[in-house]
Length: 432
Image (tube, rainbow, N blue to C red; front, top):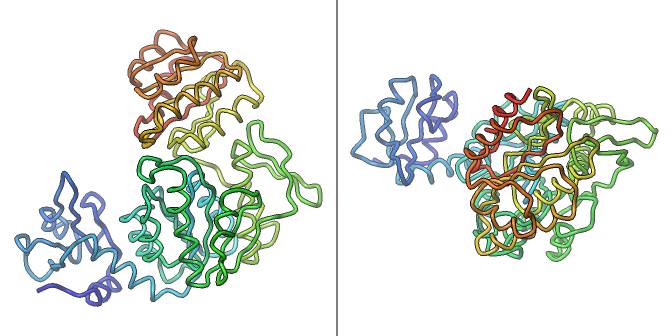
């Protein structure tokens, strides 16, 4: 017999939470057996129960194994429906955010700021897709007073799906850039896809935070009319002091606040977080404490000292917009000699060759001691960089670094997630 969403909600409310992975089952969890191209978690239902799950939710009757297996039509849709229904029981503000660049950093900054006053929940890691957002919503507890939900998208329609699950009361788009062009079908597709958050907030009468800087996000807001949405402009009495490499900003009083984030582009993310803190009635001291105490990790805008080298590690993701900003900022940062290690940018579709060539042209106009390029796509940058070192894969780079140790240098390491350039750290450690 197919169980209803209401039945799942009742089971969930008496559970210890939800899991989709038998490797991290907690006693009392609901285990949702999801299917993918190369796996069928229905086969793991009994294992999940043996490990302490209260119930296993399956969508294949062949795997029914007693009263503690609950049958649904589709495991993923059941998970999403449960999250949507549970969301409707929550009365706290939920801030939804998306954007081409800076989503996770901005989410973490907002969380750090709001946590100075509230018991705040925020998306863990990168759980920002059609599975991650439902899991995030279902992780919000009764003691939480406010939540920040990150939403990612690879194509038009993705954000619409996620906002219908999360139903944010507040929202922001960090920026619009050249990310996932293959799925979105170009930059206009990115605008339309990310703009689905604005469409939801306009219909629901939600509150929108607009970046201070004029640009595509403000244009998208104005183009929609946004008659029902209230907006908050993030202009604040703060001024950038420097970003060489870390952002320092001054307050109206003249006090200077030090952050642990590099780049002018991160000052914009800081401004968004400060404005949201002020909107939710935090004091200036609380807002600035949230910024100054935030230390990036997980290879996002992370400053690492390895032996005699200083490394700006930003290898979690890359697209033409974020790559250009990071390289330009790095070129202006104090520290010599400068070396850049760059990996392929993925999901650019027909723009792949053009965008990598444009990146090469940008680098050619700047001054670096060495340029190391990694990946099949990066060969297109070589037309402008005949003196660059090129490696078809990162393993060739690893070998080169072993043979040519780098000492007392300032390095930028950046590439798309799929190329996992953080692996070079181990070989820089050998360069002491």
